[in-house]
Image 1 (cartoon, rainbow, N blue to C red):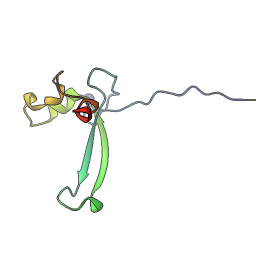
Image 2: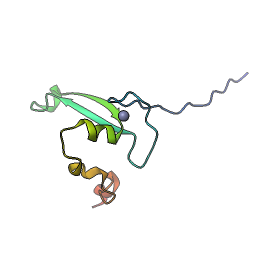
Image 3: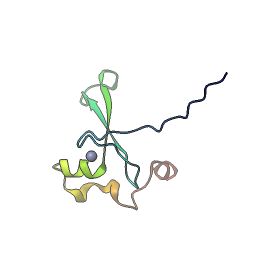
Image 4: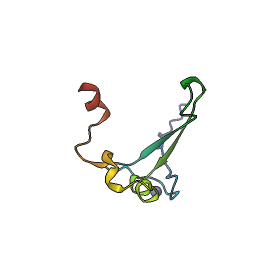
Length: 83
Ligand SMILES: [Zn+2]
């Protein structure tokens, strides 16, 4: 007998509001933290967190206008690679 189990969709939880993150034009977003950024790559540490772009913007001291990534004309990774 074969037991089939439907794959459950991955749920991302926002590090700021703790709510799940529904897919939108910008969400879910990930923050990749690099510890020891001032040291050689081999001794750095990395950890990824997830968030809503709006939660990141509202919890940051960075002016919302500096989040260029939210500009519809900001290139995707694939567009950057082909430039
Ligand atoms: Zn959030």
